[in-house]
Image (cartoon, rainbow, N blue to C red; front, side, top):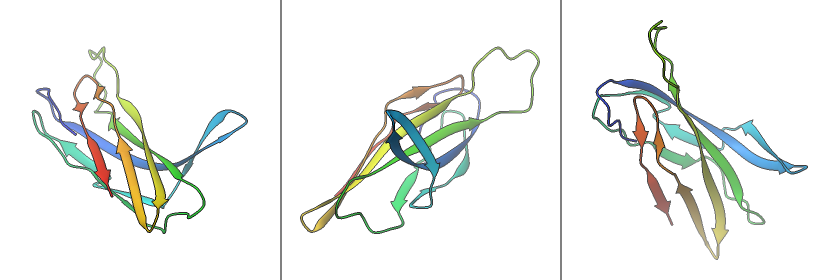
Length: 124
């Protein structure tokens, strides 16, 4: 994740199990994935690597689907601020391939008043 602005920002990462029921997205908190660091300060013009690990065995019958929620922690109230707080849901999938585990995390750029994220991870 990279902050291309002149102010630091506090960021929180949450992992959620993703499914669908009756055509609607269902997001449930999960301990299957761990993101590290889960909360961090992204310095002005700085960057932070976010590592994501699977804490369980992959399911041999189906792909496991997750979402990473990357959210700005709001600063102290400022009556003159007229911007938006950023919150991005990023898909992550885990599936078993002939004797190997393949994990995929594809993230789109996310822009906000203080942070812009650019990250793509592939693991095989």
